[in-house]
Length: 508
Image (cartoon, rainbow, N blue to C red):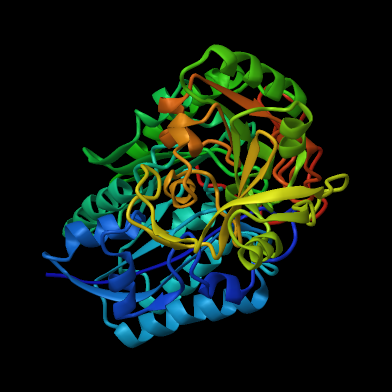
């Protein structure tokens, strides 16, 4: 029986949005557990939908698991210095108190950028490695959108990434990490490590694993097979501005030759498919017009994805472009979710169900040109925002998004929350009395996760480019640190080079 320290520190950083993500945001209970220490890690994360739950499920009966700290800040602006130092310091402090340990497992994201460190996870791992020394195996699980760096590969012995987007395999990823950990405990730290970076960025809309080419790429990933500890593909998170942003292939193996051979073969396949990483997107006005036309004869809802205001990519979830297009087109039987406006939710609760209230709804956070929708709304229903998710992406989470309200204007209803919430679950709609499958049009603030829950019920799916802080075309981001020569989208223009040059060594 081994003594294994476990913990997690997750953030998906959009470097081009405000505000920064502070300690209070990590500590808050939202659509994920709050920051927890020690025994509370097991209490909050057991049976949950995060990777650490899968790791604990498979390892707790066989090994002594020592919980350190776990937190997830979701997606948002740069992690503040205060938050990073307090949380990473908490992990290392708890680890130091737990010593000696035989191994370490960390449930990370892979796209964290802080005020001081463009490779947030690499810095966490540097500190962990310094604490445990050179001989203790370290295994990590990462989000599919991780921007993997040489430091992350060098400091770990197994790197296991999600294989799905929408992310419906987080728990299974933790179980794969457990399988890799067992191999490390049996054989020690591996010799072979390889990292290959694609020569182009893939927009998030083109990373969906429900279709090719991503579907066929992830099918080739491996864990604890033959000479490989892992062969992992991670598609990257374009809104993170760092030198190593972009798609990665990572191999840990018992020999360097095995690592190189596997990584090279997978990257060759990705490069050969460059032109196929794409998704058709239209203006909100065109998307709404098409949705209305389809909905007239359809027995199932038409789904419109408001991809650029996705809070899962750092969006504010209060942009009003798609909402205004629905109202202007006099859409009927349309429900939009979830728009974050705590002031509107508060006013609706004060007025009560059935009341009509004048509001300037949403549109307070930008980007430039996004303004509130000013109108008299009817308060159709209210909710407390506390529920258990039951969908494929977040099943088993106890969620608290604060007071909710369903506001109606003509044939359009808006599901309003007090905290940001991506539209990846039906439970919050149902709290407000909305059965999603019975609607004519579902307008969802999400980029891909909605597909797991809502695509199966949809007559059609339409992706629109309404203004928001997630830019679906990475070529529009003002990168300052990205390495030169990387194409900013498949077959697109190349990055001219970083304004701030950082370490450029790569594993090979």
